[in-house]
Each structure stands twice: as structure tokens, then as C-alpha cells.
Amino acid sequence: MRVLIMGAGGLGGYYGGVLAQRGHEVTFVARGAHLAAMRERGLEIRSGGQTTLLRPVRAVESPADAGHGFELVLFTVKTYDSEVAAAALRPAIGLETAVLPLQNGVDSVEQLSRVLGADRVLVGTTFIGAAIAEPGVIDQSTPFRKITLGEQSGEVTPRVEAIAAAFRDAGVEVTVTTQPFVAVWEKFVAFTACASVASAAQSPFGPIRETPEGLALFRVLLTEVITVAQVSGIGLPDDVFDRTLSIFMGAPPTHKTSMQRDYERQGRVELEGTTGTVVRRGREVGVPTPAYDFVYSVLKVRAVAFGGLR
Image (cartoon, rainbow, N blue to C red; front, side, top):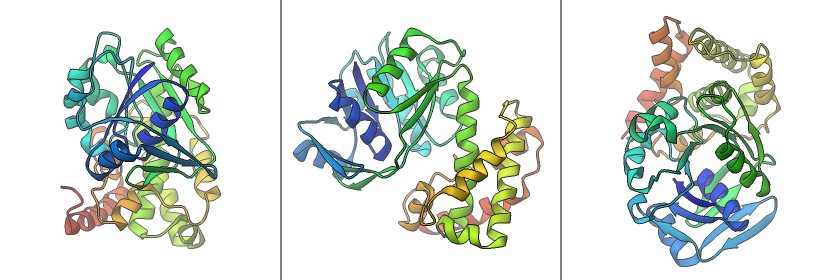
């Protein structure tokens, strides 16, 4: 399979790397020092105490330089780059290209469909912990690597089955679903509640759970985002609150979300694609979100102070 990784950070770098290991023809779109390191030294994948070096690696700065004929584009840019990245993809999209977004937000499919056409765009989500440890090096830190994907229509098509088979062959746990938007929202419910409380508290999960007020805030945030989803017509499972709370309570006490780490290093943050999305969508469907309103205000002030929304 010819694969283009649009966004070769921790997520795209890891998944592109394991597909390349299994013989797929993978091209990475990257930038800056990470791109330079990949071109010079290859891509190093650290996972489960083992290190794999992929060399040589085909890495480009723009999809326009990547060529044509890709069967799969893995869309793994940060949510704040989605619009620009989708437009940049046009030269690399062919008649047989499927685009699979694996992002933290819930707007990706709509954004990509507007730019590239709904027939090109699949629906997907992932649970994995992966980050750029240094330029050219990806550190995959969790024992799980899970992808859920499907067609927007819910139909199980040959292209979805082929993509799922490729990832399974690479050691990824894959679920093909007939309700992919529900899966995306389930991930969003968990990620946005965790990322919002941890970023606002500037704390890993442990101290938040151990502080009654911190745990109470998490529970309120979780309730609000679930209500927004339900009123928006998303048929979340009845036990989504309990399962998400269990994830939060069972995570290592030192765990931090990617948005929290972005705040700590004062980089660009996915505030609008997470916390801000709950506030915006709550207003659109008439659901009050007072806890999210407050946390969003605090996080926006912090982000503006160091240029995190640039």
C-alpha cells in the first residue's frame, strides 16, 4: 500500500513507521529539525523497550513534493492546522485515495470533506501515547495501540477492510465500526475532559484525583461534554460516563495529556479543538456548559500570554 503521512509527529511518525516496517511504501510530511533529521539519519521508533531504525526514509516538506498514487493518507496534524493541511493535500489526492483523520477533535471529517470531497474521507480515531522525543525519534509510551475506523455512511467497504488489515499486520488493534462518529465522540469525551482539567490544574492525573475538588471538577466536565454530545444527536453508550471515569482513575498518576505538555513547553495548543469546541457546540445546541466556560477562559488567557493560539 502507498501511504502518505500528513503530519509526522508522534502519532503519524509511529503509525507510518510500523507500516513501513511491514513493507508498505510510506512517505512522511514533516518540517523543521524533525524533517532534517529524518532525511539525514532516518526515523527511530522506540516502543516497548525496543528501538527500530528505519533508514532510508522518504520525507518531504509538502504534499506537493510527495508524488501521486497514494491509496491512504493518514491525517495526523494538530487540529489547529487542519484547514491549511487539508488544502495542501490536494495535489497528492488521486481517484483511489482514502484520507483517514486520527485527531483529537470532532470537526476533522467535516473540514476535510469540504476541501477534498466526502467520498475521499473516512472517519477514525485512535488511542495511543506517542511523541517526538527528539528530531527523528518517536517514543511510543503506552502498552496499547488502538484504531477505530469506518466509512461516513457506516458501510463496511473493501478499502476500509484493506486499511484495517494493514494496521493489524503491523501490530495495531483495529476495530472497523458501522458507527464511526460515535467512536470519534467517545474519544473526544475522554480526551477533552482529561486535557481540560489537567491543563487548567497544571498537574498530572494523580494529584487531581487525590484532591476532592479536582475530581469533582473532572466529573462535572465529563457530564457537560456528554450532554452536549447527546443533545447533538450522538448516540453514546449508556455507560460512557463510568467507562471514561474509569480510564481517568486508572491512568498512571504521572500521566499528562498532549495539550497539557504543549502548555508546559509554551507551544501552540489545541484549545479551540478541544475545550473551545465544547463551549461552541454547547451554545449551538442550547446546552449550558458553565464548567467548560470557566476552564476555557482560564486556558485562553494562559495561551494568549505565551502566544499559544498563534
